[in-house]
Length: 355
Picture 1 (cartoon, rainbow, N blue to C red):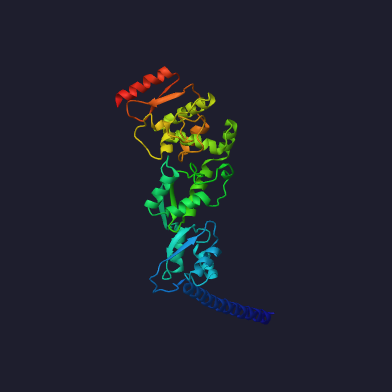
Picture 2: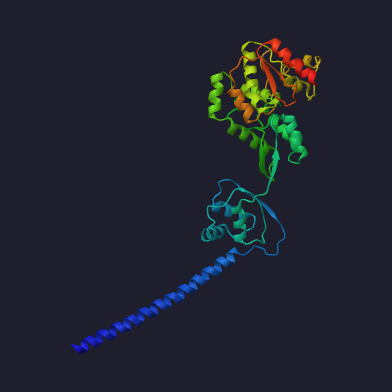
């Protein structure tokens, strides 16, 4: 019995030694394999051309997957392969963190450097601002002056370009079809943005602002989006003080209900094609469908691009009996509002005497 126990013990020791040797061998092989993988990935992440001095502008579209981004970078020879880029992105924790934009990249960058840039969102963009109350012509002038567009190309697209938006069905044809719909805002765009890209950006911002609630409200008032924006543009052009917007809106609606000419100076300015510091009687006689001193109802279309506050005022006017307003003599830009002509004359004389 004792001999059998010693034999069993000796076998257990031999088994333990063999097991330990196997584990050590596997660890050595595993360490070597890991080291090999590490070397492989390091080589994959190296710059495609470390001596390159060229900068390449690359656009990463919105919603691009890591695989798609890898393909784009591979097409520009910025990474060694799309699949290797995807693998490194996963191992480095960048997968799903990349941001759309236009980026300046180089073949001298490592894959990780490229990932850091694209995930940072530090895209190549430029910014422009279109103030509230600008016309299409004034918008085009500013964009060309600031180096964003070719005016001729821009205006041709305004007149003839094909765009798809919810409000397109109610717009007229011609050069003025987008008057009032190039939403005034500050925009960041890619440096490679075309005239069409800029127009689309502004129109899409309008569509975002004029939401479903606004369409429902317009229908309740008995107007389509085009007429609401026409009214909003009148408010934008006439109101200097923000508190006046819903009050001016009420005057417009009250006059329309009474079939009374709107007699708005801003429409005369638009008809004249110039902004005058002061209008005279002869100016109000200009022959134009936009001259609300001579026509009844709304002008044919918007006279400028209204901002969000003016659009809201057009949809939600104050409830008043006002049918007149005139600038206050304090030069604040605010207006006095009147229900009767005699009250209006009093306020008008106060203003004239202050000049």
